[in-house]
Image (tube, rainbow, N blue to C red):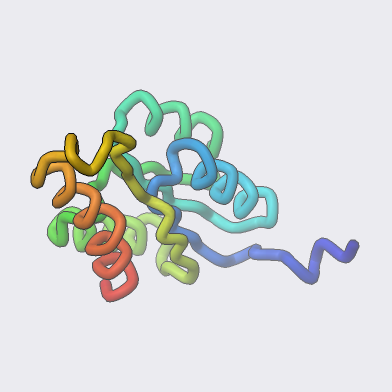
Length: 125
């Protein structure tokens, strides 16, 4: 395979929810292909581990995707750090596995805020 065909050298990616699971794998893959990568997450320990894994090619920001002020601040910080932003992966998400009869309205609102509003805000901003 011709790796230069898939090179992301000179590109900057933002992966929401990139401090674990699939998001982390995507972020590390982008690094492997030459991109600089910004990752967001809410868990401080997972953020620290992601920062260590990304090394100098990456940066980790604490952010809740459903909170517009945090998204604005983080995107500005990514552009300040790397000079640009080319790629967005809306990966952040949450779910409750309880029966619908057990999920509170607050839990439901958190799912909608994270999974839908978060993707909207990140793409728009």
